[in-house]
Length: 466
Image (cartoon, rainbow, N blue to C red):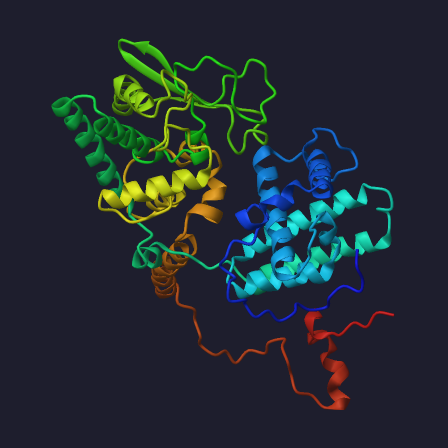
């Protein structure tokens, strides 16, 4: 790696076209991705990062999602070097240039990007550097020093660019928050309207899409603790009989994240989620539960003629799309960003605000942890359905955790203070002075000092140890 390493970040004046797409996956530069050297580097780096057993790699294999994020950061950095730093043939060799990395970090800071985004890039840069270490000549001391330099840079970025504290009031002021009651009311209204329109107008593309949207919204919030969006996007329907579609699944008998019909009369539907974010930490424990009756009835209706009408409208006859929910082109929500935009547009059309669907988790936890929380599920059970633990609520989802606890503590101090005053009144000490001689601090002359040595307490004697 190039030495000496920069001891500070360079100043960066944002170029006039800094909002222009500069990554290698953007159209002006996409041809560079297929150059032989870069393609070879990316193939080797992917194998190094994703192979189940790679004993010269630190840590476990990257999941498909982690690799996609790493690939994105690589191509953005290479595109920046090509577009702004005149690197004509960008390859993974540029990650060995600490000045270029420092320039890239300064570029992100000047553009106002979050510290989490920058730290994720630096984490990716460390992975690339460890890949270079695995190659011949990778034992050079500069590689070890480079990893330490990247680690220091990441810590100082986190220190100097703290994550902004968000609270419901601030988010509501900028139109990015709805309280739990308003959100439940909005979704319930969409459910009732879609069912009424289906009865009045029959199965059309428009009524089918409305029912699809109501069912999707009801899955995201209202009937269930907010399930991870990745689980909702990957949920396959009862008619799908193929293999698991999760890219990292290695279980031959796995059926994937699935919505199943257990019985038609009475109607009983079940959701099984073997693939969720904490599946590895939980020893592959499956999140599984029976669907509430109202939601089950809505899903059952949608999965019949309305879903078939949507598939036929998009020329995907039958069950060509295995997923329960689909975008406006009849395809599953493979990309998280597509579902986010879809949800925001739908919520605004219902009179809501363009709130990110992942914020529903914060909305739910905010209500459950508030002093005015209504009767509902246990926190532990709700957290399990959400795919995490109650401890994570305080850190990631409860945005009023600190101010609420502080206010509760101050309010509680008033009763504590009253109790202290009450106990003092009941047992007031006798402060009457006595004329009796007490062993305490007595003023004596040098000649009388020895007569009062026995009156000194242990605490008055200084002991000097050799």
